[in-house]
Image (cartoon, one colour):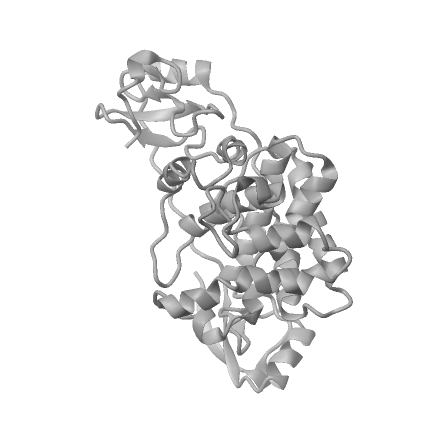
Length: 367
């Protein structure tokens, strides 16, 4: 059982586990909930004039085991026969998440630092290594969360997804790396947006939205004169909200004038924004977000979209789904070209439904 209690700053000791987020005046997380305090952090808390914080001790009660799903003998046989492991998904360890989160927050607070380029490269290398470690070819958005602060989490999600899309497109390693850097920095310009607009809990007015739209230009200005980011990276940051039909911003250019990096970032950016909860909107389900992206063929690059579809796993193997014929089924195989239509086995009947290829399943959908 977890016990939570308040401790005055003067009584804090190394080894205590903080049970709240400590943020600065710009609402950036300085110390995340769950962090184990050390002398350096405690000294920082006291210097900031914080009178005390909540800490916790103990462990959560173990979750009760979920009851085993009853399967007919035929269902059990067919599940074992047709079950195919999903592609390996990128996995960020807690230590990597912590280092990446701290690095991102440093970048967004110190755009003029001499360590800016070095820090950007270090974070991107951490993410590349996480992808390469298991030869990851897929991404699960729910596992990427690096911090409680939206801008930082969003930057890491976009960078990671974009690098996996680039790998799926078989782009050279240098391009994959540069796309990762561009993904990390694509919202740098938001550091120049007034806080009352950036952190507004409700929808923006037209005038406020016009100011918010300036963030891609501000990001470009921050990066364009830094030798390490001049060219494709800064251009991708500038263009990540452009649409191939010319209805994006800031300049409304069409497909042939949009850099390939920006086309990839755009798909990742839209998807992550859709599935992430914000104070003014509920998150889309992964399925609804994918369906919406599939409908945006006039706005998003088709090759980037296809590569993205091949990286997102909506229904992981072994998950239980409900079919439109009223039957519950277990997912046994995913088809990269048909992310919404995996192969499933009915739990009671044992029927095998290849939703992607069997014409007899054309009218059958996952509900």
